[in-house]
Image (cartoon, rainbow, N blue to C red):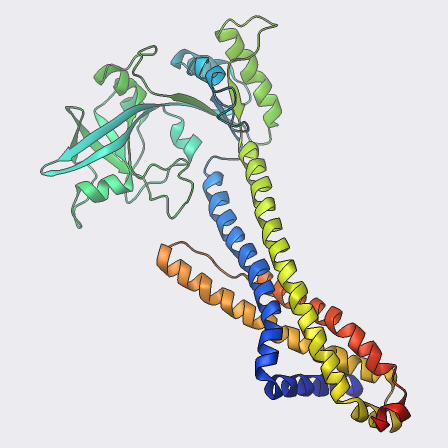
Length: 421
């Protein structure tokens, strides 16, 4: 154990002497390792941060929710575009059929985009707010959370089509000055006064604005049909979607099969006719992003690998020079009884220390860049402990590979010949 500790200290001391004696040469040699670690761990950190953000956005869709739509999330929108466009929108009658007949669902929701509206309150106004109509179960489908004492539509408000609405956080911020609550205030939407009963909690800094209600105003579907004269089949009525949340413990494939049978029956499709709708789940989008992130990570690894190869050969060159300069010292050590494995480990550990210095400089550079980017664009990019450990281990591996041949050469010297040089 003492010998190992001695090797570590002597190797570190020799590495420090090499760095101080030839600063420019050492800097240029370690630059390859620094750039390699920066490329590999930098890209990995950026991708991990991006992935965490996107995964967080996707989680809002719900892993146990099936979305009935005319577009498939797993296909390129550019392919068969007109095929998708010819498909009918989901109708309210289909929603009613699913709600009545589905045995494997805990909640069935129907929502419809009704265009953009301008909201007014006294002298304040917010333009281009997304106007959506929703059914009772949509609150559970989207897991809506509200600020303060806000709430969703009550069963009575939904059945009667009461003049109430739910608004997003950005709309509340734009309409009401600080210190004035939005609840129970009457806002004007499309020429109709609606009482605000809830403000949805902000969605946060999500890159994917999936299920983002920050700039939306929600009304009950009953009010949309009664007060705003929304009817299925109107050419100006926007896109509609049906969401089905499966009962706990129910296999989604079983739910899909049941939905398919009910919708095909409602649309009077013949047995041999292709289904003119798509059933989408979170798994589809997750698989798409998995492939994208894999390609980006691979690209960063390949770029960093070439930089590490350059750095490895540079460090190996330093070690060959170091061994040549200390040939007689190595011979004296061996003549005094130093074992060959002692010399090998000493040289090898010296190379590892040099690469660790380059790797730590790369990690320090990554930390500085990520902090700067986070402050400039207000997006959290972080250097995780896992990525830091990957960088350190990679530096050690590069050190072993770059110092192996010089170490073997040094440990294989003849003591007498080495002392003469």
